[in-house]
Length: 159
Image (cartoon, rainbow, N blue to C red; front, side, top):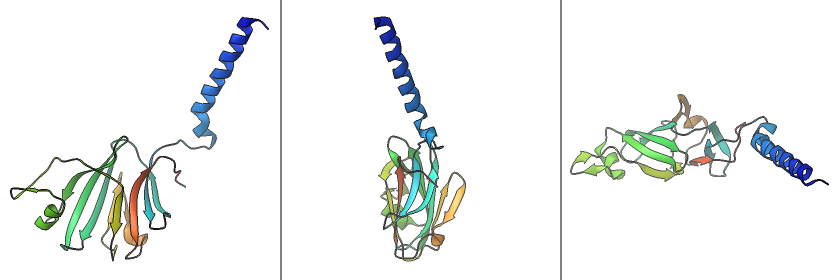
């Protein structure tokens, strides 16, 4: 076999392999992407939503210790995962709990990598999760006392 023919065939095979590897997620009709998952304590998926760099996740709830409303704002970073970027509450105690009190003043402008968020409440009646304008009430997904995990997954495909 001619050396040039062998080189051309090899290049063609490599080109096809690269092309197929790029298109492989489309073979299933889906693009592989990171998703935000809410899991129960048995790892059953309760909520799944595709997520991209810079997306904002808001978790609103009533703190059971201070009986105060809390709004946690998180940012999705494709390298660091979920990052807590803001906490709002009318309760001074909530800010103390988060370690956000410095000399009697609320400390702003922070970034705290949280990885996965573990949630446990005796009553999810006042717990809401918002992702890109879509809001879900956790009371519709979980019963009181059940542990929940909010996490990012690169391999899960939302139904």
